[in-house]
Image 1 (cartoon, rainbow, N blue to C red):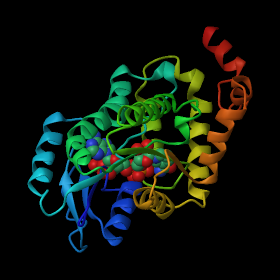
Image 2: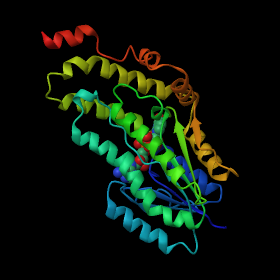
Image 3: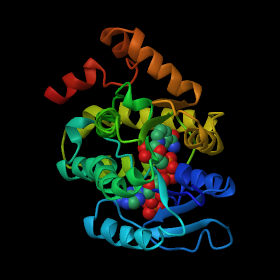
Image 4: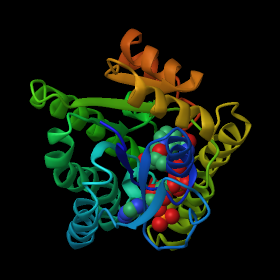
Length: 288
Ligand SMILES: NC(=O)c1ccc[n+]([C@@H]2O[C@H](COP(=O)([O-])OP(=O)(O)OC[C@H]3O[C@@H](n4cnc5c(N)ncnc54)[C@H](OP(=O)(O)O)[C@@H]3O)[C@@H](O)[C@H]2O)c1
């Protein structure tokens, strides 16, 4: 098939942006989704912005009307479910509405886009790639909501792959480790907001270790050697492979998490995060 097209969600920023550019430069036609049209790809060939808010059914429907109208020229062959947000919070302080927003964007949004894309991708015997994280293998304190979403996306991928086994469509997951994209500044800002806005006395229990955790994590991401381009390469390989793997990782930290999830006991994994929990003194002070 010539002129295969790939839909990449979350194309405005970070990993999705890098992947969209890489795929377009490699000869695919790319529909890169954005929430606001900015003309960011106007000077590039083989790529166009497509407006989608993955939490909005109507927005997904309208975007697929556009994609369907282009099928003769650019048959949809691939979907990269990449759009996502990360809401950091101690679970005890997490607002239910924020938890819903996390799941709505990263999990339900992925379902909506996949359902809309499947009829086209199936008729073209194409590929689906879901982007999760190392946190889809090990849940991390203070990123509980996000970890839950990533575990859900792992399960979504496995279930979908098994359902589509005889359809000719392949379903893979890509698990990146930390890569310094705009998501990290958003996480820091969101964490600060959550603490500032919390009227709960319980914020005192968590404030110190939560802020320390955010700082350490952001610094770790800032220093990582893994790049957006490494991610884009893995996505390209998954699309070009004769037989795509079911699981890909990007970065040694992701591999380390995946390996540990298979080899360590739950207690051993707990101990990796000993430094990222309030002290017994902080819990006792709250009771006093
Ligand atoms: N960077 C990392 O360290 C890392 C590690 C593991 C996994 N990941 C995963 O990789 C994916 C991309 O992350 P990133 O680091 O590239 O983050 P990013 O730079 O913040 O980009 C996130 C993208 O998702 C889009 N998005 C957010 N909410 C959306 C919605 N409701 N509808 C449609 N698009 C929406 C954003 O669009 P707007 O510009 O409109 O907000 C943006 O294009 C995420 O799923 C994340 O969980 C990232």
